[in-house]
Image (cartoon, each protein chain N blue to C red):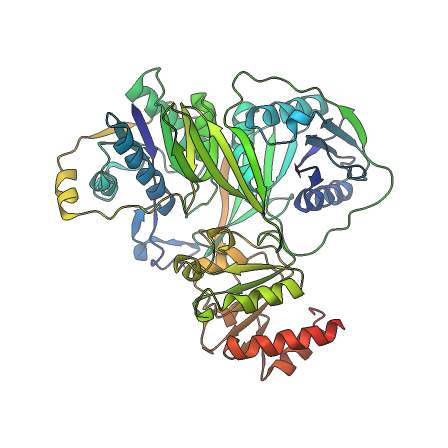
Length: 314
Length: 248
């Protein structure tokens, strides 16, 4: 019986990095507190060899019908795992799925829900467009944590895979919305999950200008991000928007090109690692939150920068 | 058809979020409808236009003194406004419970066919009220919807962005949906709309039997983000600095 239960998310048979990172963070925390081993729960089949290595129990419903997300069946599975394990702390990696499941489960389990937390241990969340940081205190027997990813790769740990307990699929009354199609983007990584993000703002000058950013992102194995201005001007899709009304990045390296650094944009990079800013305006607010800055026009600076990175990679 | 939209007021993005004596300085904050709630309301109005016979009722947990600000929802085209006065709280569980009670007061044991909320409020950003309210109402829900199409047979086709891709769903009413940016472009209010809003019915309820909060605010402090920025004179120096910092 473990106190801590981590929900692992798979898409198309692959466990998400964000889930595995969270599992590592929770395992480390539980270890330090002497509260290990931890447990995990997983819905849907995963590819051979994907199961994580960690001491503890993995509650797994491998039925193919759970391959695609379904609100009721997934919720029923987590409830069952919480009950069997007697877990008091339940963790989700923050994302589209946790946004659905965590509130639902908090009502059913009479749990306190700590959303958007910076870590599994305590809950700090940027609020008011990122201008402030709020700490929250739970008051319930069971606590559900939805944890944002942050910069820094986690040790995955090694050894034996988790002990698997197969769980049956429980047929809920009303499955709710039925997922008919999952369309994963190919090519560049997701802006919220990438280790490197190259982001552009109004200074990029147009949709064409983002080619340079794509080139650099692809060279660094990262994703392209965009400021609200760039998205509102129709240069990039909303899925790439970084900031308060967009995504939060957890990249180790964030390169902001022609991004002024409005408060609402900064809200999205609070959990990024190293921030590099390239902007023509030396007084742009982005420099106040950057580790490295370069006052220049990105249209001349980026090609030279890309060339230099290419040289390094040789 | 009954359509309910839940809205809240948040500080305008142009407001200065400052602190005075360790507390939030509210003197320089002006409040507006939460931007995500405007997407929710717009979608409700579009649904009413398609359906013909539908009532769009807007719910908000707020002091009655906020009525003039909330009337913007009526000016956009909602039919009725219900303000629920309750304790000042940032606990989504309390807010969802208060809304659930307000729905009961208005609709009895029936549940509106469609409930729309914003994905999150831009102040506390928990994004939890919609999913909790759906569970309390006993209806399915989907968060962060970016596309909604209603087929003639009543089936809803929904889309939402997920990490690295998108999901397409089929769903039926009743349902609660939370709106993400991109779902639509909220209409502007017209002078005529503003005039008409003044004549539309506003109901003020007060929340009773509010449950104990499950989450409370422990601390609130200004975000300290200032970093020491090392400036490079040219690309070569930038690369050198990044290599030295083991970033590249």
